[in-house]
Amino acid sequence: KSEASEESGDDLDEQELEEALALAAGIEGLEEAVLDRGRRLFGQRAGARLTIAMRKSAITDIDSSLRRISRLASKGVIGVDDDLVRTAEERLQVLQCQESLKGAMKTAKLDQLRHGLSEAQRIGSISPSLLDEAEHLVKVLECKLELTTLLNSEDLQTAIDRAEVLELDYFDVKRAKERLRRVQTQEKEQRKDKEVKERPAKRLATALGEALKKVETDGLGPDLIEEMKAILKQSATLTLSVPDLDRLKRETLWFFSEQGIDFPPEWRV
Image (cartoon, rainbow, N blue to C red):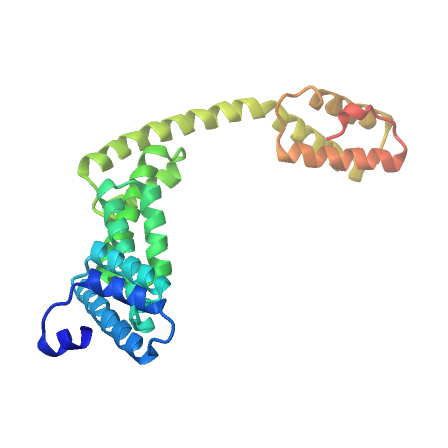
């Protein structure tokens, strides 16, 4: 019946053919050549439907065709080109990835877009123009995020420069520049405050440095030892230190240890 319909060009009910092949596969003594012809016929039709779906880039049709072929192959009632199936699976993966990437671009959610772009780059064969568009959007979204979250003026200025190159929205850039001015003012105040807090430590560092120089020129006398001990004692009460003072304290305490001069453990850096 299958062969007759092929020769006449009449459509053969596929459900009927599937049932007939399933039944024939379970009959002992049936010529294998007859079964193979039926399977090939069924496979040709399924392959043609799959090829058309691929030409149309129809995700739903490709997916349903592949599922149907897989189901029929498990029943042993279809013979289909493995290369065609593999090509269709790869095509489906590419199309699904592209749709996912387009969806992420519409929602403009940075994490989702980064994931979609990473997946697209991994799979390959994605439309180059779509990849370029997605990569550009990632840069734009990252820059927008930086304009509102960066906390130091240098990085924020860099982000503003990049925003102008990317031609971000004028008002987004304007707000970022206003924010930059506030951050710069805050940093200036913080520097002043830090300088005020560091002044006592810097004064002690200077005094200790001069005392060490006296040791080199005048030698270590009792008065100089007491002077250095007074500086160390005072420095131990500071809530804020500076690198120079810490370095000079280490040098002094090492020198005291070498000379066998006792000092309280709390003076250690």
